[in-house]
Amino acid sequence: MILFQLRNIYLKASQYKKIWLVVSVILAGLFLFISTRSTDQLRRSGYPDISALFDAMNHFTVFSILSISLRLYFEKNMKNNGIMNRQSLIVIFFVCFWGILCETVQFFIPSRGIELIDYAANILAAPLIQLAINAILKRSSP
Image (tube, rainbow, N blue to C red; front, side, top):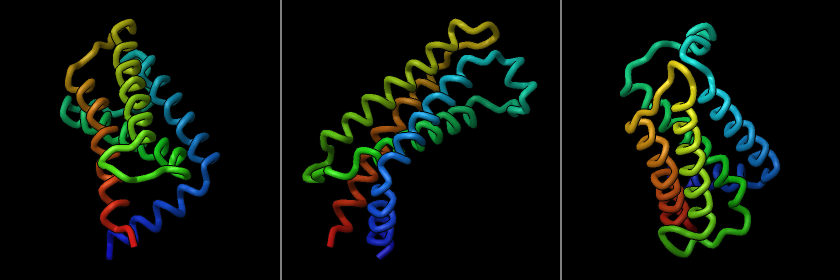
């Protein structure tokens, strides 16, 4: 019953493709913007000083949100006939590419560095979210 309700909410939200495209572009731009800020700029902005594990959870969360918003943009004409479909793979590719870019750019910012756990969190978010969405859509089909 809960999966069926989640599916209905998801499918209703997917009707607003243009909104999800705008949300995805804003999120991607925001993530890249934050990645290009120095540690001092982040501290002055009020961004809390957090542990590496909590930072990795933040990375996973924000790239999961980007993955969901992109998937909602692509959802309209999807055929969910397998564990992964073409649109899921497009979303995974883009989110993984963007996650790698956002983390790699930090190498060139003074007082910032790259961390493998952040790469892993950025890259793992998209496939796990796409698998979850596909499972919800497949199992709760009427």
